[in-house]
Image 1 (cartoon, rainbow, N blue to C red):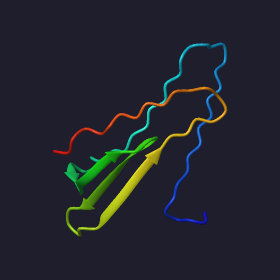
Image 2: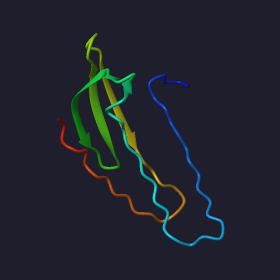
Image 3: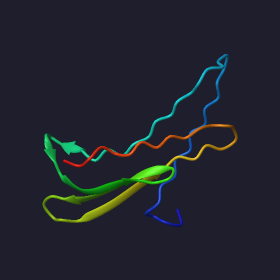
Length: 89
């Protein structure tokens, strides 16, 4: 809680009677809408080494917001694949 602008989320996966591959996907939704209206205008987006980022602006008040996400796997061997976001319309 030392920085109100940062959120951390931890997910622990424990396979029981399972030895296959586990895939975890993460993304940023740049198209949230409220009652059929899209309040955000996408400005830019990109790829990081371990995640993606998104820059948006409110359509009415023009307040800009930057969002980024990163995935880190700890405690096991894993591979990480970051797919670049689709091109902005």
